[in-house]
Image (cartoon, rainbow, N blue to C red; front, top):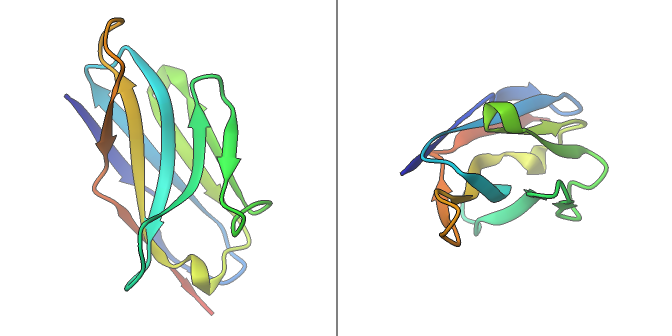
Length: 121
């Protein structure tokens, strides 16, 4: 089993910045990829940013140029640096990780509990 714990959410004014962290623990051999999703009230969960095992990154169009995903392999942690935040970024942000627990399995997806980000205008 793998546990993901997000932190770093909070209330910030429009134009401000926050950095989210997602620390993974448990039986981890290798990450296939790690992603950040978000879900605003009344909306579907959407992929915000992702990073592969080879450190290839991808972003939703709405956050390109403002958000940066990165990872610290030694700490099994992925980060989401969010700059120039807008009111429409308000949502619960979730970390998801596709994790191989042994060299012989393909991987399983695990989710964190989410962290609230609120941007006031």
